[in-house]
Image 1 (cartoon, chains in turn cyan, green, blue):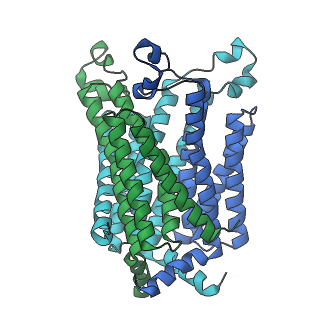
Image 2 (spheres, rainbow over the protein chains, first blue to last red; image 1 turned 180 degrees about the vertical axis):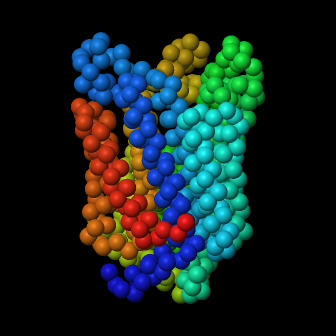
Image 3 (cartoon, chains in turn cyan, orange, green; image 1 turned 90 degrees about the vertical axis):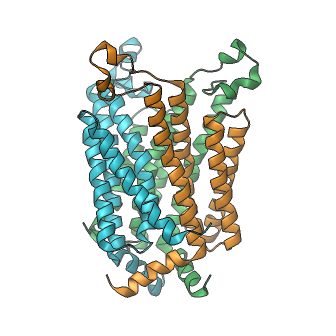
Length: 160
Length: 160
Length: 160
């Protein structure tokens, strides 16, 4: 690797807006990854599996087949996980472009912090579950933050 | 933030291929985000919900439980949304790397425009719905564009 | 396009760690895209569709309706595809930031290779299917690699 190039890459990660993006994007992705562990926990504690090979350790034939079933808690976590995918993927893409569009550091931090806080609140609202409109509101706040960043990206970079 | 670094970041967004990527990636992500609103619209107009807390405002007990059901229109939008995720995620990742691999501006624009147009067509074909092969063809065109970009990325950057 | 800027972009793709990321991210995304083709293959060979417009070529009315059904092989591929999305999206985001955080080339290659190998093994374990813990282990290895990269990103870039 030529050292001049390495320096340039390091400069990218030295930029404060980019570092803030890297931090919050990583946090929100780790939160999303946590949903896999919560799903696995509920599948095992509720004994509710979907693949026959996952129930083989419970015995053969009918005794294992009864664990091939859906469970409301498992399905709830899975819906939360899919909602994460639907909302965190746009944040990853639009947020990266936003971070590169030269926003004020304080404005960028505001966007990243509100998005991350809203998605963490959304997970609690979904899994506890809290009465509506807790889940709806937390979803809408993160959605609005992403739209605001998309507006800035298009205003700065528009090239059709 | 040191101003020298900021300048370098701004230069990235000043590059025309990168600006084109930023524009079309944002458009296609906004289109995907629209699927959430369409799902919410059908859930409310068809009164078809999945979470008990979402039907609490319709009353208690049995009177609310009847709204916990699936609806063909809701399921159709959800399938379109998942298909977006499956196809737009590869575009985001491969498209970014493609934009950084130094393609001709006109070639890059062609890729981004066809992908975006095909995915918008796919959504109309899925939601109206249009007879096949409308949905299949629009899916295949966007898929082929992504493969073409992946080929350019691997040809330029391959490092195993 | 100003040539100075183009040079800078090209330098990014010249960096060996970034090239390795570009290569493995593209491979793993192409692998994920393959799941769409495998789903389509099973839908057609098993004649198991979900959209009425997809069965129109099999005739009208009841003769076509019988193909609107779920098939265990189709559902298995779809679960593998969703699991890819849940795990490859974090790799794309965290892996990009990791590549920009200045890791040793050999360490970065180790992370990218193990992740890619584990996800390919996961697909085989899911689709054949292999007895557990093959699928669980391959999932866990890729998950652990992503956590390791996230740790490096947060250690290098943390800016809350």
